[in-house]
Image 1 (cartoon, helix red, strand yellow):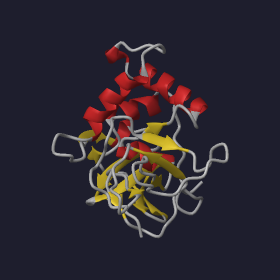
Image 2: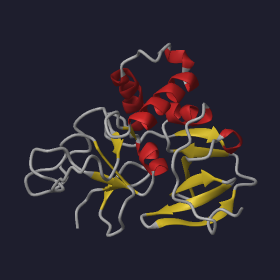
Image 3: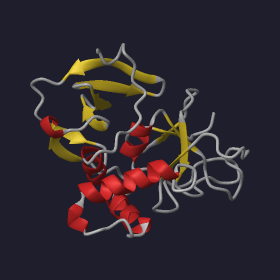
Image 4: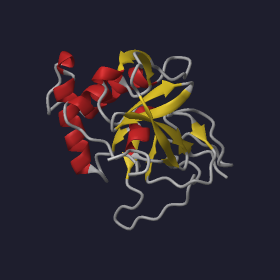
Length: 210
C-alpha cells in the first residue's frame, strides 16, 4: 500500500480508500516508491483522475509523484490548488476568486500564478515542514474550510463540523457555542472561498441534514 493519500493537514498517509482527485508536489518519491520529502516545488496541484486518455504508472521513478484526495476541500486544506492544464476552467475561477478575496497583495488577472503559489507556500507549511494553522471565528467561515476540532480535522459545511476520515465524513456536529477554532485551510484560500470559489465536498445528505 503506497503512502500517497493526502489528509487535510497535508500529511501523506497509507489507506486502501480511493480518492476522487489526484495531484502532485513534484517528485517526492524514490526508486522504491517511498516518500522521501514533503514537496519538491511550490506549485501543489489538484488534478483530474483522467485527462486526455493519458496512462501513468503510479510513482514511476523520476516522474512526479501522484497524490490522491478524498475531495477538493481536503486538497485545498492541505495547501493545493487547481491545475492550469487539466482543470483550466477551475484554475481560472480559483485565480479570479483568490485575487478578489486577497486585494492586499495587489495582484491582477495578469499576475503569474507562481506569485500566488509563493503566498500559498508560506501559508501551508513552515521551515520545519510543519502545517501552518491559525485561529479564527466560526461565525465567518465559508463552507469547505477545515478546522481542528477535538484534535482531529473537521470540515465546516451546512453549519456543521463533519469529521474527516479517508473513506468520507462522519455525521455532523453542531457548532453552536464554539468560538475560536484552529483553521487548517490556508488563510488566502479561505478568502477565495468567501469571494465565490465553491470547493467540491464529498458530503452526503446523511452527514449534512437538508
